[in-house]
Length: 403
Image 1 (cartoon, one colour):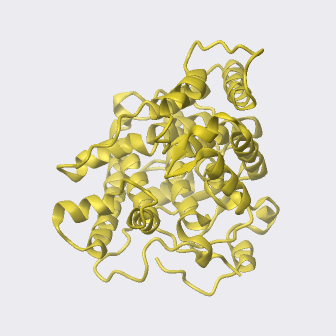
Image 2: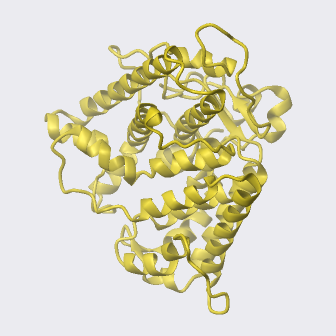
Image 3: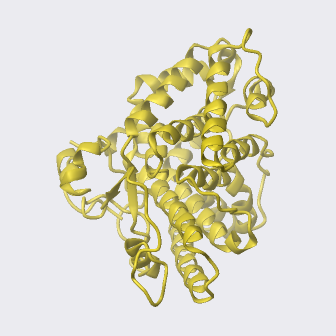
């Protein structure tokens, strides 16, 4: 998973998508390799699901497309562009309306940076005011705000904004350790079902949250689904998560906690909202595939963020080290290098199991075409998380900037 050639911003732009879509491209400026060098005993598996996604047909007997994808995305070819692609799943895409996502997040960051309440909210030893101001000052468009562009590539403009809003609220408010009750009272309470805002006395941040909720309610009324409201409900569920355990007895115990801690249910709900799907993903038939996608997301995310999080913990900038690599090292008594490789092996095993589960669903003819469209959407959300970890500055920093 090293960078495969001496790539530049220009070379990425020229080869990551078809020529007609270059005008829609996000400005790719970073390339972060989540694993340095090659691991001799690990090889990326060949997955059937890559063929199914390419054909838009999850079938063993046909190649005719089962569904259409909205014309709001740019199909990406990160490996052809020389990017260090960290997964065996190949399909990747980017939202055409990336500037809407960036501007929405910028607006929210600016409002939080100016809000009096945030001065008393502390995360990683700094006030939320300082954190949001720093994010705005350092090329924020290449930070967390870019994730929504890749995780939800099929969102139309009116859905891209509230989906990006939810993404921003997660990253800005997660991690607050001093003043969390204020976060709940002033911000999260406004997201709960049935909340009625008092427009005469609200702050600019509170009004912005209310705007997000109003837009979600409106697009649900128009589509006849509850997908946007469900997205907000999963955002609240994320904020209501318990504190992390001090230790874990198994990796599975860690994974079960981490699934909620990295907002995987929000990712699933947001993906459903972005493609305007009415599928009930709580149906038990989806449970295995969603669990495997959740596991892949958190494993890949933990591998990508490991160096950054370890450095923050070692230097005292972070008081906890919530990362699978650290858990594997602790439980197995191995080095961090070995734990990182074992975590990657677990990710690739998870992707192989996901491939097997999809083949099982095909063989048993369990899902309708509309339900396969939903599965396709959450698979793109999964690889969108991988794409984000590669091309943003959040994990690799300036040393990964392209010339």
